[in-house]
Length: 323
View (spheres, rainbow, N blue to C red):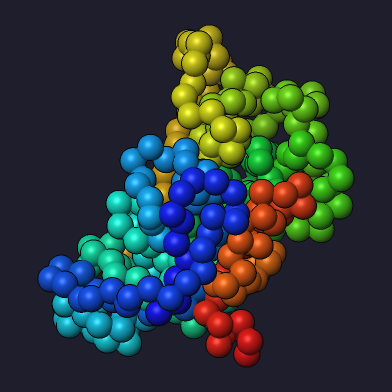
């Protein structure tokens, strides 16, 4: 099969498209034919050598959508079953989805029932699932004023689509380090765009709910723009900082407000199918920003790392991309 292997840490040029042996079925695992997957910032970090637990060579890829090709559990995962897989140690402790086929632990393969296209489905797993879980934890209601910090990211756009899909008149603002992306964000559906300059929001506005995708680097500043009784959900770490340092919960959390979080490892099949049902019931338009083939995954990484990056980048199986 064709796959993309990283043999040593470095730039996009370290993503080697090559022929490798197709994985062999083993007890407790099943083989999935990969129809598509999203490209994630965490895979860029791993490619760069910033994931200490990952040993090279490794086929990256922490998510995929596809169909069961070979199974060790015919009852739960029959051949031909449409499935989604997210996280676990996929693409980290064992080879992941940057391939035509991936061997996965059965407990990490989730059967799904959906009429969405492969392109739509490939856009969803990590990104929309993370956005959906964050939205639930924020307890959003239509009267809320909402801020997405890190709005140009895939999760930021997904969160906007889900919230606007449920609440027609809700106000959702987004942030960007560059106001050159303001037009794109307004076109995507944000009501206003706030400049995020050196970790400081250039506004006097306050919000009821804040989705914090930059992470520990900006959490303290985000709380300065929180209304009383508000909720901040710290979900992303796009700021490249992993821990809250010199953070005093008594002083740094806005008065009578709340902090929560969501992590995509908090996953199960029921929640995934709830997300797909929510998307179909609310007629939410799911569209990736860029679509590539597996052989062009280095270009996908380059785009995601560039100043032009916006929304979700997906890889589709060759025959789907060419259809």
